[in-house]
Image (cartoon, rainbow, N blue to C red):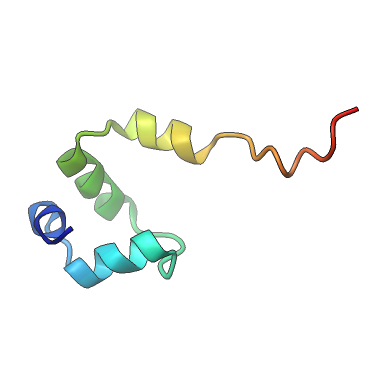
Amino acid sequence: MLQTALDARVSPETLRKIESGRVATPSFPTIAAIADVVGLSLDTVWAEINQPDPLAAGPRR
């Protein structure tokens, strides 16, 4: 985690807060930097955060 934070030029505490959900909406540049360091495209990140929530759809009949 430390190396990822340093490579992304964010503080380790910021990365910990993002991972734990204490930062609900991290800035775009922060997400872009972290994604780059861990080898994810922004398209992949976007697809992951925009997956439908199966619990929100309600029960299926």
